[in-house]
Amino acid sequence: LLAKFGENLSDLNGKMRPGIVHRLDRNTTGLVLFAKNEMALNILLDKFKNHEYDILLGTQMISKGLDFPLVTSIGNSVFSGCSSLISVNIPSGVTSISNRAFYGCTNLKNVILPDSLVLLQAYTFQYCTSLTSINIPNTITHIDTGMFAGCTSLTDINIPASVTTLGNGCFNNTGFVEFTVPESITKIDDNAFKNCNALTTVTIGSNVTSIGKSAFELTNSKNKLQTVIML
Image (cartoon, rainbow, N blue to C red):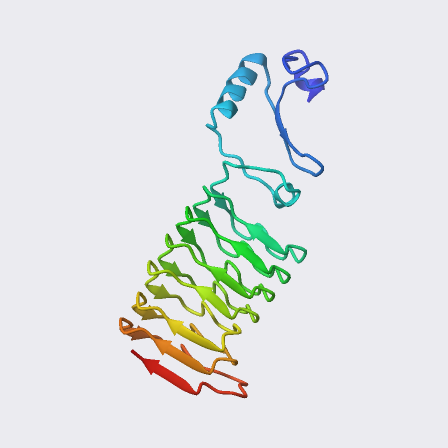
């Protein structure tokens, strides 16, 4: 870089930082942004100062405990397979969590979701086998496909009145013993509770108009589903 642009690189940030606009690599690999000349440097600095650029943050930077208060979304598979992750507190301001964001975080026990969240995509927490409970914010309207599939320790969930649909396989192979489908739910998709082999009692709200195939199919269950209450 110095060999190619050395004469044009600005020393505005010091001679030891020629042309450097910003760096996001504290204690880890990351991003270093350079400007070819001083005019470009000033333009880029102003845009960063005014929060006019989107920045993609890597998993390592977030896991180091760095504070990024302007984060608005968590991308596909960002924390997938992070087996050392135990607790997650999603900051206020995050509006979407994409597919498989926490897939296979097998030691994840605690998750706090903000009221700013409007989108939770498919398989977000699939195979988080240590997760026991979670509160869904009242800004969510749909429990998406496979969202908690394989969460074998999950026995408690707060589903707000804003949610109307339980997606395909959303609770497949979870640990529920009893489950009450809220009054707000109108549709239970295919395989929603398939392989919930600890499930013995289900109470279904009066507004449910559609239950998909194999929604409550159990396999290898010692207890079997004993009671279904239709309100």
